[in-house]
Length: 236
Image (cartoon, rainbow, N blue to C red):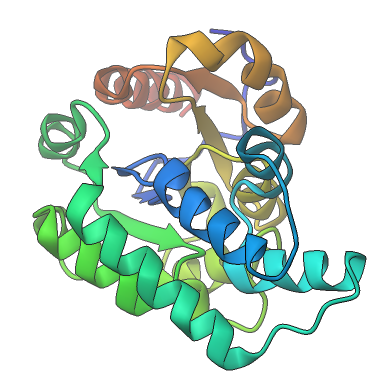
């Protein structure tokens, strides 16, 4: 995998995981529900374009953007119904990213979750898939801050709450939106792409957004962190 830059290494004291596309293979499922909901408003958008344009963006912001473009009005009640449908479908269909449980077990550094999803959805799905145990209850949502990713708010909030400096954090993100948010917060970011089939087309996007390295197999993460820790020791 390519590397964009070497990073600004301090001792890694916290590993921060995005959720959708990093812990849970949920993005395509949620997207399809949202796309079908938009069709009822005569907003027709194909799944590939939807994913490329809005990966990592909150549903509320996506719908606001499209409503403006299509001159539509979208009520809060409509958004709530869409969110409820997304959660219902995800509860039945979502799967974890391959090897994520073993990876989380092997990483002994404290870990937290930082997601643009609503906290209720995030907490419910991570509990269902038995992943909350790896984060000691430290699950952070965009609901906790004023501005969601790509704003840096959630990452700044986490650093304050976990009593670490940004350069002591390592973030794992799968979208340009998330990478940009973490970089703006002063954190080093690894880009993750869940399938090697999509590496070539997405790798450059994540590197350009600010990821210093991109990887495509979750089981590689513990070794990557070990190598970064070795660099830190040598620099120290």
